[in-house]
Image (tube, rainbow, N blue to C red; front, side, top):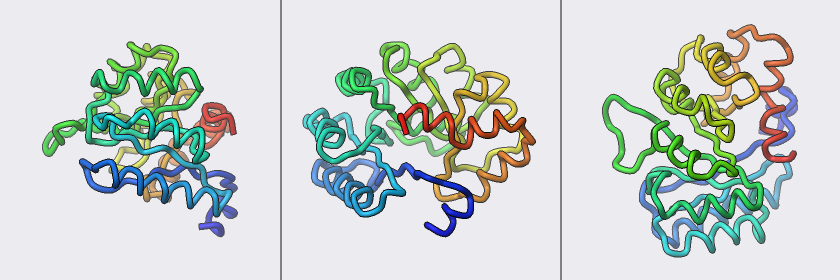
Length: 221
C-alpha cells in the first residue's frame, strides 16, 4: 500500500470499516475500533465513523468517533435510509462540527436493498440540512439518475468510487456539477477509477481538483 501511495503521490487515504448490512451495536463499535487502530498505527490513513442511525446510541457513537477516536467523517451504509428522521440529530452534529457525511447511494435496476439510499434520499437529507456537507458515493450508482437530483444542492459532493462506470461519466458529472464537487474514490478498484480520470483528458486544474484538492478542502487536510 505504501509503495503504491508513494508511486502515485498519495498523502492520505480515507477509509471506513463495513461488516454486515444490518449490524448490531457491538458490531458497529468493533468496526470503528478497527478503523481507529488503523489510523493510530499509520498516518497514511484517515477514517470515517461507521454509523447505523437506527441504533439509539448512534449519536454517542458519532461523538466518540470524532472527539475521542480521531475520525474525521461519518459514513452511513445500508441499514437505514439516509433521509430517515433518525438521521437528523447526526446531521445536526456534523453540520455544527464541520464533519463531512459520506452516504452510500446506489440506484439499481434489480436487487435494491430495503434501506439502500439513492440520489432521491441524499437530496432529501441535504435539503433539510443545508449547513451539513454530504458526499453521495458512487455517483449515486448511475450518474444519469443521481447527479441531476443534487445539481442544485451546493452542500452535496459526489465520488465515482466502485462500479462499472463508463468513460464519459466524469465529463458528464463536470457538466452538471462542476469539477469542484467531484471527488476521486476507489472502493477497492484503484486502477479502474484512476483510468477514468486519465481517459477523460481533463485540463490539469480540473484533474487536480478531482484527484485530491476537493477532498483536501472538504476535510481540511
